[in-house]
Image (cartoon, rainbow, N blue to C red; front, side, top):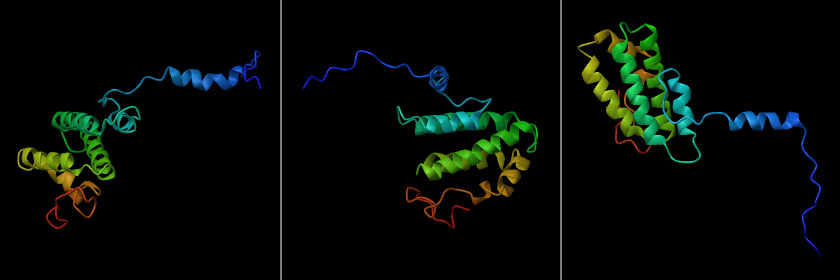
Length: 151
């Protein structure tokens, strides 16, 4: 039997092609953007072309440190954005089973903020999600932190 492709192809309707055409122009996320850090962070984590987990974590850390350092008070917009970034980083660290970077960052934040910027550290410690502290072995087997010591 002859297996030549058909000579005449029926074009798809233009309406069906528009979403694909628009998707082709969607810029690929290459870094955590300080304007939309949470969205760009998760986009990097979901990149199926390469494992960019550690790169995304490192960039998110830089963005949230900058936000928290520039904030004037724990309740201002910059601080709130920084705390939101920290919550998302914690969530992703558990999900991706990569707790070490978050735990190291939290220790560094405590060292930097606990005395010099006590209101920020108090705000972090009272946050419903962040007050859980270090990521413990109860949350991911990759953590070497004991659940009691993690608080």
